Image 1 (cartoon, rainbow, N blue to C red):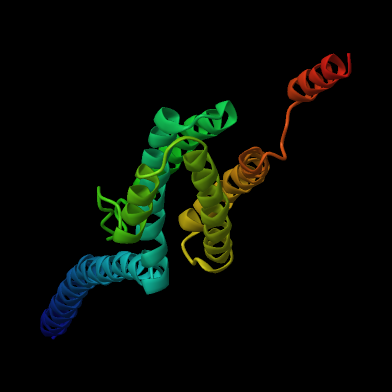
Image 2: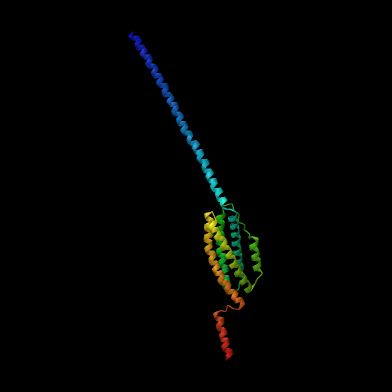
Length: 236
């Protein structure tokens, strides 16, 4: 009887042990499933992040392109053409001008607008804007008009154009400095404005000088002295 009870107890213990092993096995599978789920989860998350990152980068590119609206694109292309015109007019004025101040001003135009155009081309790179290496027709026509003039007439026409052109440029650059959504273009406009305003003030002064000389009103101190000496000789 005791033997039977002992045998029964062993059977029960064996069954319990087997059930425990089965439970442990299920836990291992659950653990593997859990680990597998964790390992798969980053893949899905990384895919999501990558897609989000790509979308964000694409959005930034689209924003940069969209920021360059038609008005901004027109400004950039006209500014580049205007710089080229100033450079070529400056080179022409250094050859044809008769007034020393006009020649000095023309040299400054070549130097400053060459630098401005280099900065402009750097800004337009990567912004889907094509800058031509040739001037627009309106700028080419102005260059052709001044080529036909000589002597004091050239000095006067060149300086008048410098005043008119810089007044117009300042208005356009001020608009870009206020309204351009691209920070690099706003900064370019603001920086260039300082130079353009200085050019305008000098152009006005030189224009007034050559205009007075053209009409015979702008005599120098030496000419006044010579005129006085001539008058004294006549009286004698």
